[in-house]
Length: 168
Image 1 (cartoon, rainbow, N blue to C red):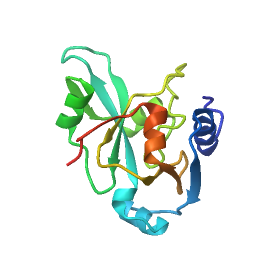
Image 2 (cartoon, rainbow, N blue to C red):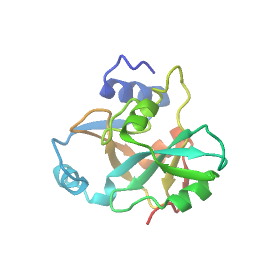
Image 3 (spheres, rainbow, N blue to C red):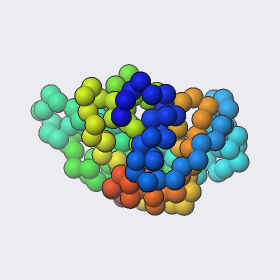
Image 4 (spheres, helix red, strand yellow):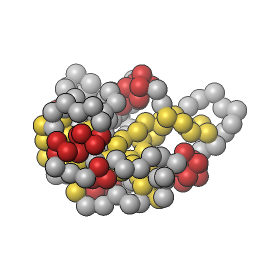
């Protein structure tokens, strides 16, 4: 996926390539997830946050990998549960700069579509999701003040998402 495209164009191109039907919605500026939900006429749990996690397979390895965690807006990630589900020894939230380097998206705009901005990579990041996510959801859409709507089952199938209880 070319990083020369705008965030919205990267999202649209990847969704089309995967055969996933998405809808872009202008949500306007929001200073909180609750405000974003209100702008979209949704409940906070219907907005799914996409978090970038830095992970290590062993305690002593110097190399980090990145994974995406999908969590409903009314929950937080339980890092111990996510580590166990994903099979990592260490895992924590990536910094905003690390998240951008791993996905090409800034916080609030991150989503799995087109999130392969790691230098020279075309491989999508592994995606883990809280098992409570279902139905039509909203998430970041690659650009500020923009959301995308997608059927969670289609999204999960397209990215071979691994689900489990990762929320608290």
